[in-house]
Image (tube, rainbow, N blue to C red):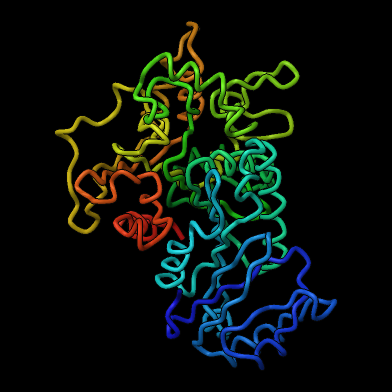
Length: 421
């Protein structure tokens, strides 16, 4: 719960807002939005006036099934520009918007005049068994409705946990579009030589600026997401790497987790197509999965190096086994005690990896690694080895419930402190 002096506000995401803020304000400072109180959306000026009267007070609303927005009331009501960066937070399997509550609160506290945080809830509880594609379509529709509700936002970022990272990757493929801009090249004599300038004047450079839901994509961040699926050896750690159990899990995953289980274990073959996660490392005619990922300024994968019983280290960090940091390379950062390794990737390294791809036959996991590493990733390895909460690392990495997963707070702070605005 946000402190009353933080100015942080929880608002419901309503596909067709029908609220009466005046009546709600009269009830109490922290109030409940009645969706049926009036048929029309309040004007922007009325919303701003309401926020100004509230000052720095806490404003709370019950959420509907479409999610919740966090933002700073004073920042939104101030005469200067309102927060322009929309952060979409996506829950994992059998999760809900509540899973990201702590992280959303910290975002708004640390960046009150910069961000609006939306915690998605279109895919919660048993809906997370419907499959990555179905969930991705729902998330895409939800994002579009949020963008319509906040016409002032200009940038967008995604923060997702576990299965939610795959859902977010699908959704951005659906939301991707680009605008073509033309600019004269080489008009600066200070930068170009005379010969280059004269040559460049004859051409126009066409550049494509990718957009996600019409906004500038900034950060795509995942926490313990099985990017390579759960089919490979030790990719579902609680099976202890035993081959017969892993084979059995692949065969029965759909009985436990529905279509999502099929997708995670690469057992789907809808209409004779290749597994969805394999298809998601390339662009298709109508879904530009890799173009959408490439459009983001940053892509970050937070991964548990140990004690995550649901998602293996390789699949969550998009690495091969020999690429995982050795134990003697893991270091402790006093500011972020559970961040043990941070690895960036340069454009040259990506080119080298791409140039080494031959025509040899490769397995599905290797194909997904090669596809996803066409773009650069920041890999942040996390270890709760010395924490009492280590056995629930999969939830602790995102601080799913503060009283139970509080040791992951420094991981959340690390994400926010390195967030590209």
